[in-house]
Length: 123
Image (cartoon, rainbow, N blue to C red):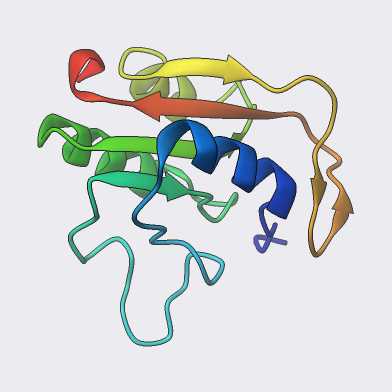
């Protein structure tokens, strides 16, 4: 299942630090009218992408960070994947999340999570 709604309290804590002005995955990454991958993102962005295919979202985050934008992504902490080694590791600050998040719509996650923070200095 791809729809892991960000825990509201966790998002609020991140928003206090980063002051987000956009969330292209607000509706589970699948906008009914606008595809979050195809539109321009704001300047301070939070992204919780579909967990089955984070690669396109991570590539978009890298591109947006090269334009001077800040992108904070909540991702499944899967270091066995090529998207982690090829895209996240060389381009983002990583914050490991202790324990398992309790997602708003799914309960406790069966996987660990991490934050990948893309900003111009890492691009």
